Image (cartoon, rainbow, N blue to C red; front, side):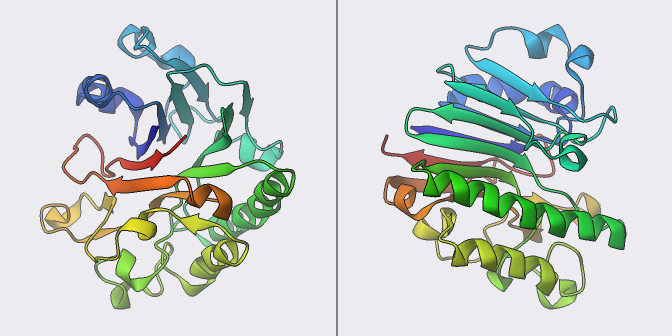
Length: 254
C-alpha cells in the first residue's frame, strides 16, 4: 500500500501545474494534500470530477487559507473533519480517516514565523495533538500522522541549520516538541530507510533555493512503533514540481 503526502500550496494553482496528471500517473492508494487554500465551492470541475478516488475536504473559516484534503481509492470506514478543538478546526488543519489496519491523520501543522502569538499556537497544537494520537494507540489502533509538520527536526533536515537556529521551523523549542513525539514511540518513517543528508521537501521561492537544493525536510509520515514494523519504504520525490514542497511517500505491507 502506498500513501503520498504533499503540501500543494493552493490546490487550484497545483491543478494548473499538473497535480491530477501526476495523481493519475502515480495512482497511490491514498493522497493527503495540505494548504489547499480553497473551500469546496471555490473548486473547479477539473478538481471535483471523479479521479477514481473518494475525496474529502476540510477548510477553515478564512477563505483562501490553510485547508486539507484526502483522496482514497478505497472508501474509508470513517471520516472526521478536525480534532474537535475549535481553535484548530476553524483553520481547517486536520482530516482523520479510518482504513483497514490504521487511522490516518492528514495534518497541516501551524507555521510559527509570523509572530509570538502564532508560535504559541503552533506549540499548543503539538501539545494538544500528542495525547489524542497516544490515546488511539493505547486503544489498540495503528496511527499514521502525515503532512506538513512545519519543523525540521535535526540539523541533517535542513541545508543551513546554524543560520536558522532562531528561525521558526528550527527553533529548539519546536524541535523539542518532535523529541516528545519520538519519546512517546512515534517514528519518522523516512529515517527508517534513509540516513543521508540533503533530502528536503520544501524550498523557498527566493534565491533559486530549489535549484541549489537549499531546503528543509518538514513533511513527514510519523507512525506508532508497531506500525513501523509494517513500513517497507519511504521516499521524498524532489523531482515532482508544482509547489514549493514536493511529495513524500510511505509504503506499507498491509
